[in-house]
Image (cartoon, rainbow, N blue to C red):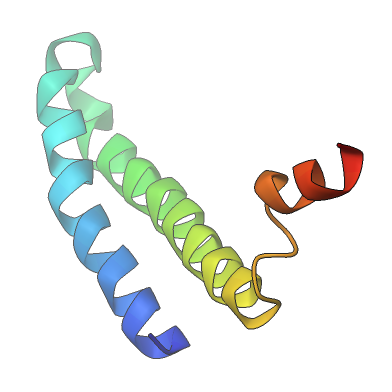
Length: 76
């Protein structure tokens, strides 16, 4: 999977999760801030999703050397 496909996948997940989170917690958000909160949640999840996609791709490029499982091989 290349970076553009991973980024697209992350954005798609954010598009599904962010509105669901806002709807779930809407009763706790002041009415004047629902739109702003929705935007903030989308941006936050988008950054996290893209960062995770990039990490996964970089880790794959290094044959898993960035993961905890790889560290365990050297500590035993």
